[in-house]
Image 1 (cartoon, rainbow, N blue to C red):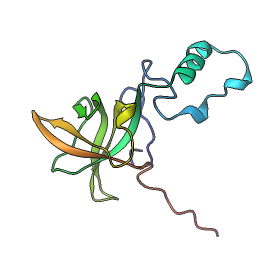
Image 2 (tube, helix red, strand yellow):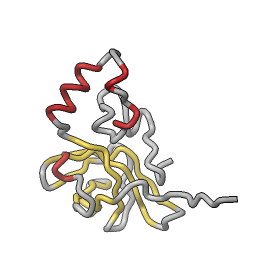
Image 3 (spheres, rainbow, N blue to C red):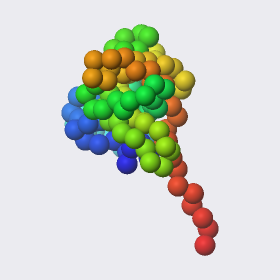
Image 4 (cartoon, rainbow, N blue to C red):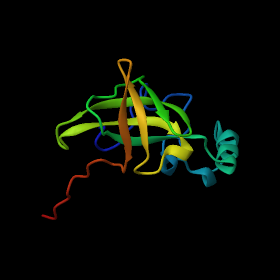
Length: 134
């Protein structure tokens, strides 16, 4: 799930995270008519988001886990998911960061058990399965 950047409800998304912030805008069909929350989503889309869910890889040793603070150059965020990826052979995760700190390659500090550990915003999905034609 994490390598494919599939958001987990309760960790990466909840009722405080909008589809625009979670990079799930492709799910929302604004032109399909009225629905609960449509006005709020339209307003946020027009104003722009302040935070965004991004993938990251650890630069320093350690695994940033759910709930760990993330200190980015333009503000604070939070790690929403993190683990060691056996497929990639390195620690990866998702974090909600200020939108100004979401460019691929941006470094930030994830606080792991009281110490700062460098992490870097990475392109997502982390891994895509090859679809072979039969």
